Length: 376
View 1 (cartoon, rainbow, N blue to C red):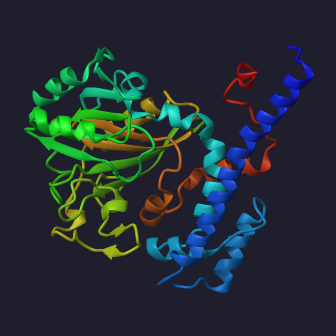
View 2 (view 1 turned 180 degrees about the horizontal axis):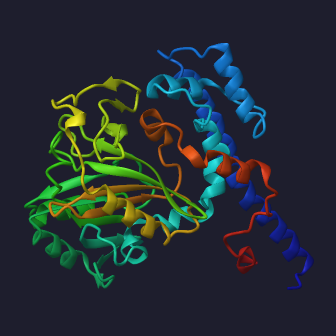
View 3 (view 1 turned 135 degrees about the vertical axis):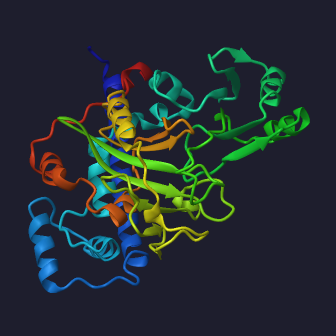
């Protein structure tokens, strides 16, 4: 397409701004995680010996020449296993996540209001209402006025509402029980966000609720698309105290799930504090799940709906009928600190294959994910 000189100048400027934004996002993310490593991840951590440092450096030298060892020290100390393949958080944020996952389209694809479309055929919580850009729609995406939407909610004995976009760590999550029209109208009129999803409350399996029934406790499963879809690790996330969510940022704790479905005998919180039993009582290793095969089969199929996102953190609940339910798909920046603290290196046996692809193989030029020319 031939452009006028002023159009070509504007195009080049827009393209530069577009690509620079995501480059800076990676750079600043890496910088912040480096600060975290010194402020948060090096306290109460056993220091690496010189031979360990040398072994780690020798492994990573072929990939990157500026390695912060604080994350290795932290994960080795907390997990109790020495392994050079731990992925430092700063390297993950600065290089790996942005390579494996298309950050330029993540904001739209991860909107929870559209998961009913992307994941049609998979079991998910029943959607009562969509609230998209300030408009109410029913579960079939038919438009509703505010009064009709509220009446639909009043007919529900119990439901949850949460932001569908730009949310993290359970922020904005709210449960309504036997809500009145007036209560809901007041809530909606006070909203300062325009994107929410209203869903049924999932009644969880007795085994996922045995240690903390007050929260919906989920299984975080990491999948990697490399040749085909691999299941990397699984972690069980639990709420604590009066919290009705299991997010680590809300005080939740997490432990690994062994190959036989049994939980490990220890758990951690987001601050790296160790627990040998749940703070509200009960040992972790008494819990064993017999539905992990079904969960793994589900997420491997679901991951194929998102080839733009090769590394996904799935949050899976299990219903009373032992059937897995997809709660959320974390398409970028899945919390590797949760996984590596309890499960070991994020990519495990695929570590060198992933690192070689990202750091050593010749990369294609990045492709714009939007048609900038349409604005000229």
